[in-house]
Image (cartoon, rainbow, N blue to C red; front, side, top):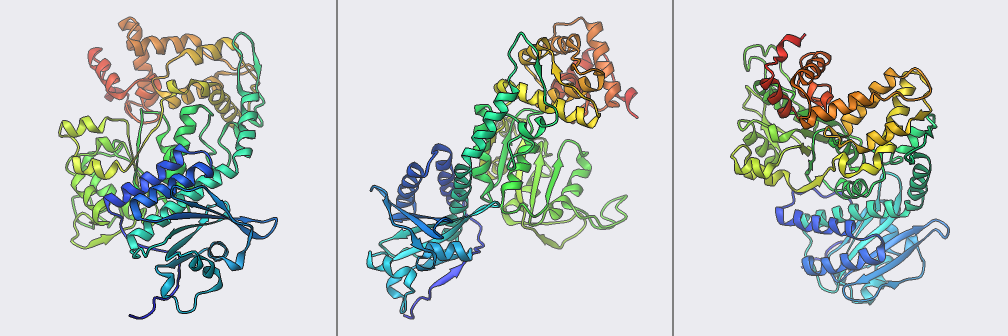
Length: 528
């Protein structure tokens, strides 16, 4: 048998099976449960020992002060072993870090002329050793190695799994190493953002917008509550992989912002992010919007059209409100997810695409499957990595920060100087349940800024209480009808969507439809 050559590589292309995705997600979940490498890496070593028969994990981090690699070794069931700083050019981790390529050795014993960087491993009885660089968008950290005292045959699927696990660990380390800076930012936000009930607090509107966000990583996601931080940990974990993410949450919780954060942190960050709202497009046009059509495919198809799926090739597609996807289109979506191919309407030519999907919905898909409105096999394809996006009522400690963020943003746009929020107004905002979530709060603050012509923010507390009564049903039919008519007028007869009447009233679209039917209100008379 000819000798196996030492391989240096960096890219592997294979579609992981459901079982392999499960292994990857198990590995990714470790990063959510651990806060330091001295607990994460032993757990990783044990997991790899049971799932892939690897004996140990090595972590080599580059030390710029000594221009060397600090190598730690975790063997399954044993204590950590720390090596002295090793020159970059004498170890596999250093080579992988410097060249940003992987080192793949299936069997060290068959290497006729083993390079110096692997000789020490063979002396320790190592047979298989695979090393992957640890790199994020911000920095090159080092390399992670997976080793075994036995020969582990190399397959594309296994290498892809190990590579994606390395990407997850890299993101974890990047976050951990920058934690001091993030903690400092958090302390700054808390020091400038918390309002004490019963007194007025000044706003520093020039700096507040930058301080309220999550730094460079999540610039538009505002807050520091525990539910939000848990969400961001999951985002960091799944972003480094190519797995399908399913965002679950109520209307107005910011699911698209979460999707864009995943895109920003993913390996596809430099490629397109394409978004489609399944409820905003008429059913008869949705298939064409998603997959495109050829000229003459149907009446009115005067030109060839490229669909959103094709536009997102090599990038990420957000399929928003996927729970409302018509049953007639679900089989075609399942096919493109499974086979990465589809045909445009009116064409029999197959189009191949490489698209990572992020799906979002405010519906209970389990119930939709049980009721026959959503295909079970499609649900399993989408539910690879579910992420719960918490409603605002579960993260009320973020409300003062959000209020200041939106006041600063809209005051800057309107060229107004608003420096004070009355304590009574802040207390009312904190006590409201926000059925429309962050979108409802954002729209209210925008209106408040428009109404304000002094340094003190004007909050129409009567309107807020009226909206509360409207949502809870504690209002006379006459007043309720007047509020709905006003919202429809402002929305041009549109019910759903970010600027629709339902969102303006802080209620679900179905609830508004029900109230309109009861009050004999038709939206058509307000449509432009």
